[in-house]
Length: 289
Image 1: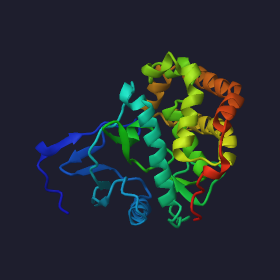
Image 2: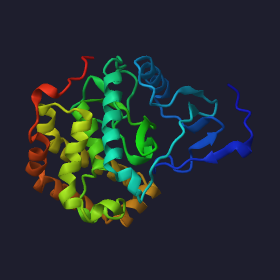
Image 3: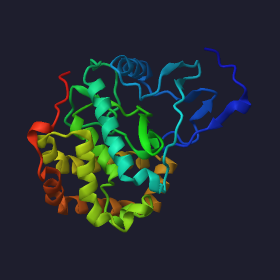
Image 4: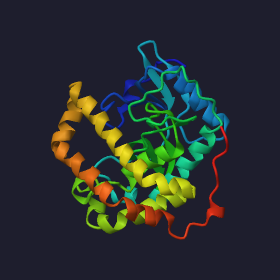
């Protein structure tokens, strides 16, 4: 594959803060900064495809300048403030189903423990399966209001499936108090207090969480919030301007204190919603790794 692509056929793609302004589409390829473990990550993406998961980028290679090349996946991604279509029940249900498909394929991939998987958003308890760990709206491709693909696997690392569900819930329910949710999720803020439990249950149902995982999910969500806070703290301490600005714009560390208090106060409400009427015989276990 050559790099001779007409510059007129190139355009910057929207995304998150980590690679803001550095992700470019050139024809049918996407070029972006390659993570340090890019070779292992590309091998993982190829293994997912062999296992039947066709909803992730196709790795093409790495340029001499260190930028990775991936196949472009057409569709829509949501960026903040997140639009109404991204917050629909149909969208949420499809995200849960897509994450389940990823995990079923990922469970059959042998984890290369020497690959240097990024641990910043990873499950502190570890695991035998690679999780995505960053299923935020900018990393999910939609068509006709339904999630069809996941992108940006830079944070992939071994963990428990329930950890990936908890991280996903944080973005898609979202697991935020109404004041914290309002700037990013304007269509959710007014009904958020009564809606969060129902949306968390919908995500669990669409994924197919086991009763045991449902019971532990509220605590894992709280643990995930602590990991995300530490991630932001590291970025700010390193002098990353985008994270420092976002922290200031969104209410500083008081916002994180408020989020963690809100989650803790509603832990049993969330657990009750997750377990109400659950038929233990209808939940599919993941295949063994």
